[in-house]
Structures are given as structure tokens and as C-alpha cells.
View 1 (cartoon, rainbow, N blue to C red):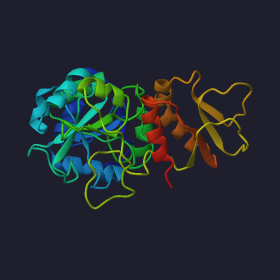
View 2 (view 1 turned 135 degrees about the horizontal axis):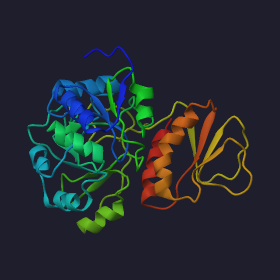
View 3 (view 1 turned 135 degrees about the vertical axis):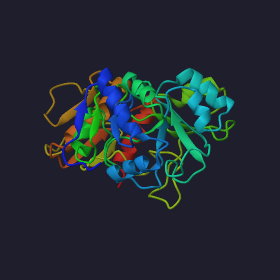
Length: 329
């Protein structure tokens, strides 16, 4: 359909969910809430609908989409399942974990960037689960933002960025986690690899699988001719328009025309260009605020944004992965 006006935002009423499910079955795009970030969803079995995602986002065809499912039976319809995948699904699904598996023929190459594997997730968000059930099909959905920009964590973020390119946004409130899902490569279940860190930590994966999960490997620099194995692997990604500079710690704030973002609130009286992600430095709370803060600061006209790296492992690995990509170049 032709988009001639700003997208409409829908509350998650039963009537609205039935209407939006109908639009998805008709091949339309719907921006949806998840517990991680907002996604831009299309019927995963409709190749033309999925092509609309790439056009709306300006997303290269080399960057694959994650397919979201409602129940475990759909996993074996889309991918070749192994014991490791079943163990992780039993522990972490529904939740912020995506698994990469060999794909079944029913999955279109356009969704997987031409690779013989597919990324699959069962989301936890109540409204999205209802929408998946009502639509009756798996939904392909990357983050609902222009490709490479900071991911959206509210319906307002989606409307600000894509409001003239899509017609429907389901408002499910602020995303609880605020960072994209953990992605683990299980094509070889005896040698799992972490492709993108997230709220499900590498240590948590290892505890369930009982074997090491290879540490995150740095990804390629640019849009390769061959498809990426999973989303979120570009060197520059999740980036505001304002330059981001990373620091091991922040104690001095010398320039008033530049913003400084600390993980926890610094002591003492602070200038107005100093910000923090959580007053006590809780990393999960900090992660939930990170993208929203980058968006806010991007709109305030600062010359640069200085950000402090998170310390430790687990959620710190996910936060620092996003910051590293946001600051690339």
C-alpha cells in the first residue's frame, strides 16, 4: 500500500491485535514491541512482504533477518534442530535468545542473506506473542529503525524514524531489556559460537550446554558480497549521527559543548552536560537506558558524545559490543 501520512500507533487491545494480525497476513509491515527493542515485522512466508522491510529500513540484502515464532513446533518447521538448540529453548524461551541453525527449504533465501542457515527466536513480550498467535505465521523482524542507526526502544522512536515509511505501529511500552537479543550459532552443536552478546550471557549459555561457547569474534568491516551469518555483525552499527568516543572511565568533563555519559552517577556537583545510565551502576538498568540516551543526546546538538565502557563480563560484554560499533569510524 502507498504510505501518504504518518504511521498510526495502536494500543494493544484485542480488536487492534486482530486488525494488525490481518494486515500482516495481507503482506503489510507492522512495527512491534519486543522485550529487547522494537522490531519491523512481516510475514516470514511472504517474500514480497519481507522485501518491504529492506526497502523501509534501507537495509542491505547481505544482512539477514531474525524469524520470530510463537511455539516450539515452529522451530522444526524452519530449521534443522539439534539437542543443543532444544536445551537452550527449554531454558531461555520465550526470551531474548536467537539461535542460528541450518534452514529448511521453506525459509526464503532473502531472509537469510542467501546463507543455508536461519536465525530464530521465540520472543517473550506479551503483545507480540498474541500477535504471532493471531497472525498464524512466523514473523521476520529486524529492529524498526533506519539501517545502522540507534535501535528503537519505544513506539515514539519508531514513529520518529520510520513514520512516513510504514503505516502501523503496535505500542507495547518501553522495551524492558533495551538491547537486541543474544545470538548463538548452533549449526555445529559441539562447537557453539556467540555471534552477538545480549541479556542471555555467554556464561549462562555454557551452564546449560555444559561446553564452552566461543567468545565473540570481531566481524567484517563492511557490507560483504556474501551474506552475514546473523544481524548486528557490521563493524559500524547502532550509531547516532553525533560522533561517539569511548573511554575506560570518565572523571573529567572539560568541554561544555560535548556530552559525557557515565555508567553510574559520578559523585559531587555535575555540569549539565554530564549524564549517567543508572544512578547505582546496575548494568541491566544501564543497558535498558543506553539506546534511548544516545537518541536523546543525538538530538541535543552536542559536538561529540563521550561514553564510559562498562566493566566486567556478562551484561558488560553486551553493552560494550554496542558501544564499540556505535563509535566505529
